Amino acid sequence: MIDTKALRQEQSEKSRRVIRHDAFSASFTVDFTPKFIAGADVGFEQSGTVTRAAIVVLQYPSLDVVEYQIARIDTVLPYIPGLLSFREYPALMAAWQKLSLRPDLVMVDGQGIAHPRRFGIASHFGLLADVPTIGVAKSRLCGEHAPVGEIVGDRQPLLDHGEQVGVVLRSKRRCNPLYISLGHRVSTDSAVFWVEQCLRGYKLPEPTRWADGIASNRLFFRQTMQKNL
Image (tube, rainbow, N blue to C red; front, side):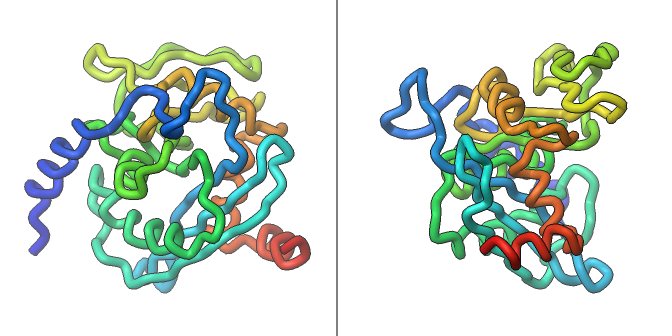
């Protein structure tokens, strides 16, 4: 039997270790520019019994893909609302260990601190890997926000019980907005800034667009990777 109470308590305890300011590296300066930015996403195979994680590393600022790794492991936990990170992080860590390049920043398809206990998958993975992370989610898990304007770049703060836990960003016209939240070792302002720097006309920033495509095993992304790498 899964002790969900203990897992929720673990989330609350670990959320207090999340660094919410910019700490990209030991030599961090205000004019920090990453050399490599990665995207990370998780999908499931065989009716959910196999977890497939993809991490794609892009060179910045060209955003050319320079490496990707996929890890497939037996799913360790069933889907439980609010505890998704425990289901996803083992495969992400397995993919992380396979990388030959270590990115300076990772955008994770999912929540960072925009989570009821301030510990979504971007925060969980960032803390375990000790890497700066940003949560880039397609839907809202918690909090409220005012309507977002229709112009690309329009945004609204995402508030939960009076605390700002993220930013809701219009990344593409006629598309639902993104829910951006810091994961670990990144401030909210920097999280939004770097997501915007990686937009290339699609709803998703390039790192998570590629990770999403590969983790979902979509044909276009698989064929492109086979040609280019």
